[in-house]
Amino acid sequence: MKNQPPEILSKKPLAEWLGSITTFKGFTGTRPDQEYENITWLEACHVICPDKPDIIEDKKQGKYFIPCLLKEAPLVGNTLDAAIKNGQPTTGKMRSKYHVTEASMLVMDIDGLCETDFIVGLNKMANDGLTFCAYTTFSHGSPDKPGMRVRIVIPVDRPLTSEEYTVAWHGFVQRYWQGESK
Image 1: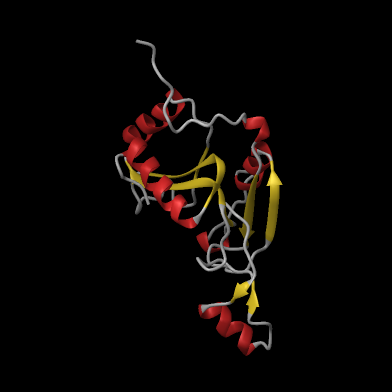
Image 2 (image 1 turned 180 degrees about the vertical axis):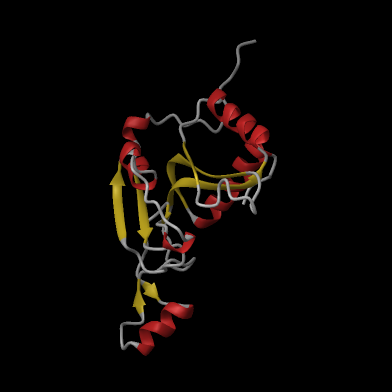
């Protein structure tokens, strides 16, 4: 019997894939720094994992991204409070569940998984023929945070709603790391 490709594989050629990313200055920043719309996979990889990464001393200084664009909506939480205090509009774009649009990629944070289990998952992804970008995060190698500290980004063949993203994310983590991810 011939091996069948996994059902999760896309029929869309990677050369036809386009996605969107929103970046933020600092890990805790809620207001977008830049939005990249309809970029290729290679362009997305250069945005999220540049050839020359920033060297930072504090995790809060690092750039952060989400795999979608943001929509204009009423601001919430501390961002709303700051806008009111500074006399700024109370509607706009910010990082929150109320502002996200459909996602063009899955983003996995692998935090604390042992290296052997991580490599097994990566090999399974490669054997399944998946396209992905993987890179270590700020905490990787920190003595007080054992295990692998890695982010994996996977392009998806169609935009995912928030609900679909959650289902896909959990299914992916279960398939490749037996549910061991953050």
